[in-house]
Length: 408
Image 1 (cartoon, rainbow, N blue to C red):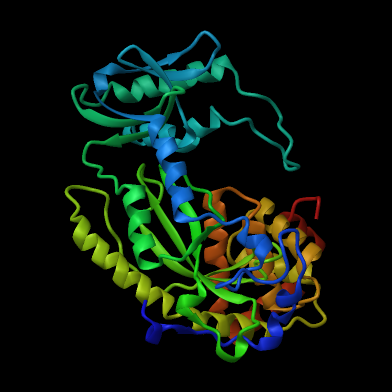
Image 2 (image 1 turned 60 degrees about the vertical axis):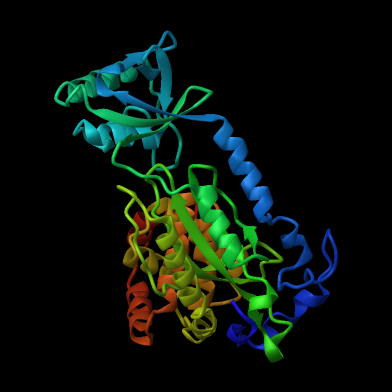
């Protein structure tokens, strides 16, 4: 992006002045050329580091194309379910097993239940799956495979340690994550990768935007900033995407507010993909996404005016959890994060921050889901917020027990 296209950031100067003088382990204040404290900057990665991690992972993997007749479900000598592929044993990840079950027209919930140790309402395992469960799984998969064309070919992504990472049709076309990162580097050459949870299969992370494309003007001390949340997957978990995200006090905890959805596009991972056309589409999309970040910050600040009075914040979080269908574990983590870090903000602002904090305690998919939820809450109207607070007032102890785990 050129200088005249710099994004105008409008957060109040008082919002983040403390960051400039904040002494940390690696230095005081923000890293030169950024609005990121030196401590957090030290946790970020450059494009070269990400590329090195990907190349290292790619070197350990192997893509195999095989007819279905050479894929045989087995239970090994240790009582573990595996697939024999032309004399080699591979142990499927939950994702690969889910894909295989779908091909066999078997309930993915049933398959998952045979692999996961069940827990009670306190999160404690009630028993561990064993060889009998593995045998039941083998029988189910064998039964499903017998109805498929044995000569049909599939793509199996495996690695040298004997793990099956994906079970894909030959129509599936992967968009190479290394190519994707090169495209993004060309668009935002001075960006830094934060919250990286990706690998050569799947990308989860945020590109922090440098000051070269951010104009803070009178708010040069602000700790409010912008970043680009990116995603892609070579094995079918995520589509290729870019969303603008917001951060505050990233120097302290890496907490991000959530994603503000702008222009969107979809690319199906099938057939021949024109990479030059895709490169242009990504470039146009990123520029459109980044342009709405200042508006997102204004939305975030406005949530401070959506206050809570004479109602327990636990009740309000419970009402939000019901509205957005959070399970007990998720709702409880939001309540814990609020009580630990955000209780000074008895408003929607505090809840949004508690939600994005909670997301960082979960796996990558849940983290993205919680960031999306944070973005949804930025668009909440005063009327909807008022209705949620009213519903919170009516929640009794019995209802709260159905929303939260007993630890809250």
